[in-house]
Amino acid sequence: MVNIIKEQKGNVIAVRLVGSIEESVEFEQLIGPVSGELHVNCKEVPRINSVGVKAWIKYFAGLQQKGAKLRFQECSTAIVEQINLISNFTCGGAVDSIYVPFSCTGCKGEFIGLFKTEDLKKLNMNIPELKCGKCGGKAVFDDIPEEYFGFLSR
Amino acid sequence: MARSLILISSLPEDAQFAAQAAAVAGLALQSVKSPRDAVEIVAAQEGCVLLVDASTQAQYLDFERAVQEKLGLFSSRLNANHIHYISSGDIYEVPYLIQSPLFGNFVHRNFHSEPEVGTHYGRVIAATLGDRSFGTDKLVKPGTKIQTIQLKMSTQKQEAVEAVRNYLVALKFQSRMATVIANAVDEILMNAIFDAPVDSMGRHLFESTSRATNSNLDGQRAVELHVAYDGAYVTVTAADLFGSLDKNKLLSAISKIYTDQEYRVRSAVAGAGIGLASVFHSGGSFFFSSESRSKTEVTVFFKRCDNYREFKSQFRFLSMQFYF
Image 1 (cartoon, rainbow over the protein chains, first blue to last red):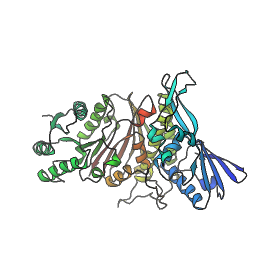
Image 2: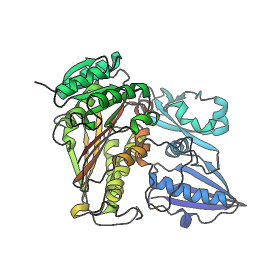
Image 3: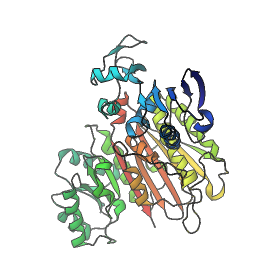
Image 4: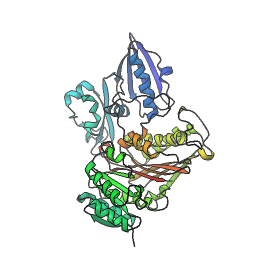
């Protein structure tokens, strides 16, 4: 079940989604109406099921139609997968930053790194290797580049 | 005399795959050059299983034409449950198979030279050879322990999903893989709980009922989950007692992608219609077994991999066994 932490920052409403998004989600009740700009932090969304996707698109598309400006930030890997799978998942909003998955070639550990989408575009899918925080080994991007970064070229 | 697995393909990787699958399924492998040769054997022998290279529409149409001319498309000599199409293209790239009256099973030719994929698929073929293909035990390595969860209330779905996720993490699955598999379990359970129930006329009882609604799952609404891990593959089955699966609707839903076209929200129905497609896209394979008005089992398979990249591009198939 998802919870929401909501903040007003000037003309901007910033919300942080925490938890899995599934059939019980009620975005209308949790976030409510938005007329200006809405920043949605998705760092702590580990999972979203199909009914959650439907609720997401219904709510955010409704906001977008009413003139709200949407910005999605720190998108988790689960959210990035949906952005790539469903062309209108972001409902006309901008994706500012995403988490990129890495796995260690030594200890097989998994971790994520935060990247701004403008920086990812400059990297042209050539994601630098990182040092594993657990064993110091080489950690490499762990997904299919053409799929994980597919949304950048839309 | 052993039943035959007839391979219609000139590709060496298909021959290797077929040899492994035939050995596990206890079938005698016969490779033929053309669909006509295959259909001649089918006409002469009982219970043949076909493995057909259908990477292009022309290859499929050659096969369909041969069947039509020798047997007829709806001949009792050839059961769609026993036809397995192999394609280099993904499921959404083969609309001619999706629309085929002879569709039964789809194998994506992403073998990656892994020796066990033919063995794995051989168990799937073996499960289809009997009178009925029900039972997770038929789909896993012999001796694999199968855990059963009986859901009493629809809201227990999330607990079951989390339990499977935690089990996989304990088995050292990457947490991202465990989450993807948990999502697959979520989707097949949701379908068993809300999409499977129909009335005596076949009308869906909960088409517009919110998926958050709590209801008792007793009597005919009983839903069971079976979970097995054989050291390579995790296998999860959701079982219901309605036998209401519609082959055409199912194929249409699984083969639809929204990477280029918009997903349109349908408010009249509570389901989303995108769950199974996303499971297949994320690396899962499916085995559907449904006996009309009796029961349905939907099984999903995922291989445990060292990294997510391999996990996502793993060998996949879609098998459909319908009994009327």
